[in-house]
Image 1: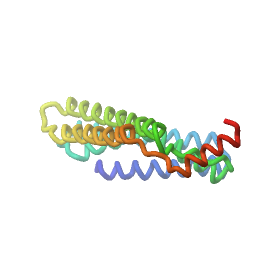
Image 2: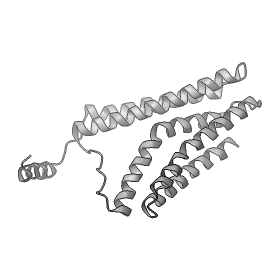
Image 3: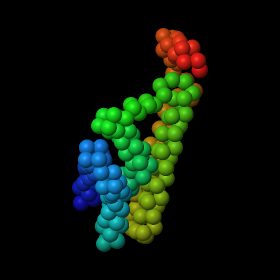
Image 4: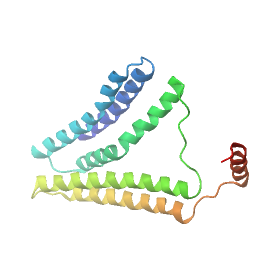
Length: 192
């Protein structure tokens, strides 16, 4: 049941997001759009409550409960930035706004970008581990090994993402020579 609810929350996230952006840019109803987008956190709250009730009713802690915690952690950390990113693209496509800037591709700017993404993953792992620890305390004396396993999953994901982000700092990708020349030429023409 928990897995079906996680899938329903994910589908609901995208449906609410599409509806919110469509209402904002096609129907030009900003307030209605904001209400739709503010319904997004309700999905995670429902998932949290159903998971807690499931455990309270005597369900054996399992991988489904761990997955629910990881999902909630990921949504807390990456949900707002995903909505903002898609809002920028919808504004560009549907309302004539300028194209949103792309993430930097080279050098220290790319390393900073990857570092900020890793910080989001840190938040996701912290939320997931905190929820899992609360579930362990909530269950009490029962078998909580599956919940502990998912804490390690969150920490491993954090470590792997940290190593990947660190590679951008240690071995920064250099801009191609023609891109650097074009950038220098653009600075000369604009006087910057």
